[in-house]
Amino acid sequence: MNAYLEIIRPGNAVMAVIAVLLIMLITGNFTLSAFLACFVVFIITGGGNAINDYFDHKIDTINKPERPIPSGRISLKAAGIYSMSLFATGTILAFTIGILPGILSFLISILLIYYACSLKTKILMGNITISFLTGLCFVFGGLVVGEILTSIYLGSYAFLMTMAREIVKDMEDIVGDKKEGAKTLPITCGMKTSSILAVAFMIIASATSPALYFAGILTIFYLPVLFAAISVFMTGAISILKDQSVENSARVSKRIKIGMGIVFLAFAIGSPFLQFLF
Image (tube, rainbow, N blue to C red; front, side, top):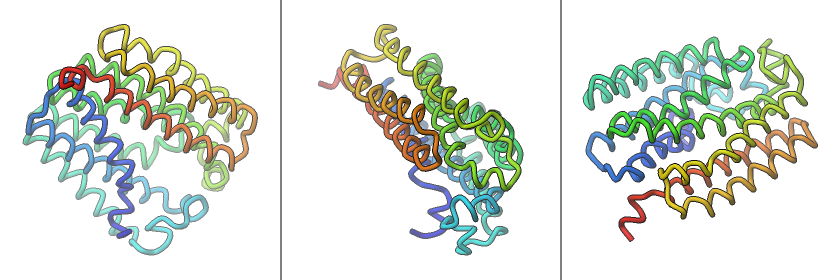
């Protein structure tokens, strides 16, 4: 893969875009502005991933030496310029949609930079920031299509699921983070405490997520797929409680990501607009 494409982690950027697409599908609103919002989210998320690699290049030589900067495929200076260009492009494009989307995109860009240079290394603050930004992808889509309340509901569950994964990812990266002096939850409070908190977020999300059906936001077709996701989360929860090793943390992190993908699929299948079509 081209290094400039790899550094924006297109898979993660597409996951962020899916949040906007889901809001479009659930509301049945497929306007030009909504599609432009998808591009904005992809570009700014890519900028966030690039600036994260910029500030993490020392840690990545230990945790992820194959990434573009530590592997020498992109220089540190080029990565910094590239990320700033992506933030600027995404923000300008957002202002073509409207003042509020533009302002929100600018603030998100600033927060992504602050996260990468400072918040990431602070206990729980980095986890909360990334989880908040993940949920904010839904809210950004809701702002563009005029469905703020629905987007906040969906974004809240994205926040809970992402918090679980972010904590487990910190468990996975504990070796490199220790060498760089980071103060993540596993380093400060231990792997066992971290696993318990991650599981708590998984349980809260799993136990309360059927409420989206009972509140009339999603149809009954949402529930069967949701229960499949819950089974993935619960097997991951049991696994991380039993084994907090770096190797198992990596496996559980991937499992949570799969579970999140299934939840997003459940959102789509449970869309009232989709039911209306059929």
